[in-house]
Length: 294
View (cartoon, rainbow, N blue to C red):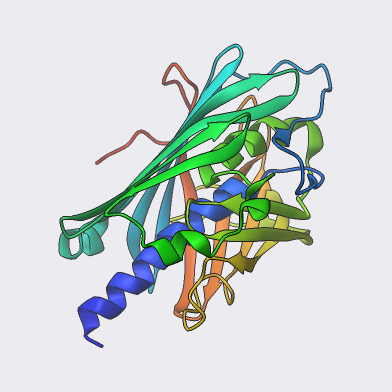
């Protein structure tokens, strides 16, 4: 294996882990896997209009990835967008990006996805994935380049009911964060080819100290995130099964409640950290961190 290929795989895994961990870090009690949508508890609390968060991901002491995560909320809809891309010295050497979005309905405490899109670009090579939903259940999956017939057959139809795409999960987690404040025991996820569960347990609160890379300081509550592969994975790949993420959450002045301020990733390829560096309201008002200097 060449050094370039090794760095390629490592940084892409860090990026995907950071994005998924942020998505899974804010949910309340578990939802039954047979449910057709992710249910948000009805507490009578007004929902926020949305927000935009930016994280820097570090590995080996280098800033490797920038992670932007934004949510716009309407009545009764939602739109969520995620972008990850290599940055700093790593970005100058290795060009990689992932963009994902989801749209759907949010009404009476229920989130029902309508569509999901993602585009993964590595050194000019791109893979695009689209999922169309029918009543909140993944109905049609298309990919370019196309997935093989064997890939699509690895996930049986009965495994898909109740599972949502990663960015729809982000939306549900954000909306429930302020009123629940708990780690989610289990979340079923289907990304168009693979079906897996994200499992969480509670960590003891801790005091986080600031640094040049990590602007947040103060008490944070924690969740440990691990993954259980259900279907669609190649048996000789270790993707996700040996990944563990500690997620630290705190109130930073965003209307929807506590946000992930630090992610600590432990993987077979080494350790990494993601730090929240910036948070804005939908109108662009900065509520945490400093203005972007890039």
